[in-house]
Image (cartoon, rainbow, N blue to C red):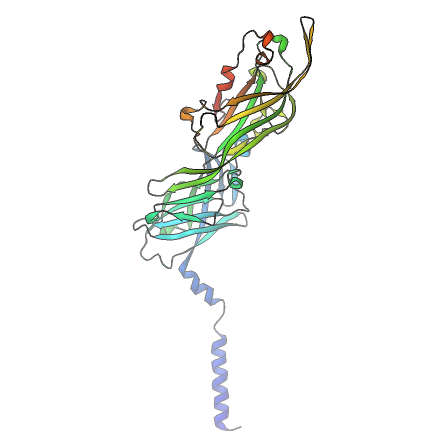
Length: 361
């Protein structure tokens, strides 16, 4: 081998050795300088009251067990969306970024490559994540379209907040419920004792329940409202055979096919807050009546009796307030069925009585 050949081999070996010293692991480290890890401290509220909180990956109960179990929080298998704009210029910095739950904790990465001199970012989040978000002019608001399936899980939207970019690694988010949780209680309010304890609840259906729509989250005014409701459905609340208790002291929550003592065991559903219109939303109740003897005359059983209760006129301004729980109270009165032996119908109080937030339970 000539002297020149040896030099070429030595130089080539040296270059190979220098190349081999560049580790593949160094490349992600250099790229990560353009990103910041985001951790989230999450709370979930209903009507301003904290019902759940996530601290270091643990979802804890902050209210009564009944409220926590009844009202949906967050499913760790589902992601949420994050919106970020420059607090000063309004430039879009996080364009509907999807945040996943990893090992029991929501984390994400903020790509600050194009953030320039941004010092503070305005953040807004919503759950569950949606692919299509429509921004208004200058990114001052955005539309979230929720389907029926998502509103049945109780979608959440956060309060808009501002966070210094240097503290983007720890973001506190307060999610709020934006739908209503609705249920029913029922009892027998027949005034004549001879006609009491005869009613069997068989079926209860609520008609024209608002179940999908568009929520507009206003970043400028730190507010959000349902602007468009596009789908209505009928909800079967009860289907079974349950004896109805007598009077308010024996009033019970309506379950799927039973009557329950506790709200958390009842059948409740979510509704998009919507205007209640005359003749539109109503409850239809089917019930059977046992046979009985009165004044030596036998009245045979009656089946599939129907009573309808309008929801119009029960709420202030006929509008649901989002984030609230409502329990409607229905009193069934046999005086309205057996007209020939009616004395004093007494239904009005029970048809119009509502407990918001169920504070009395």
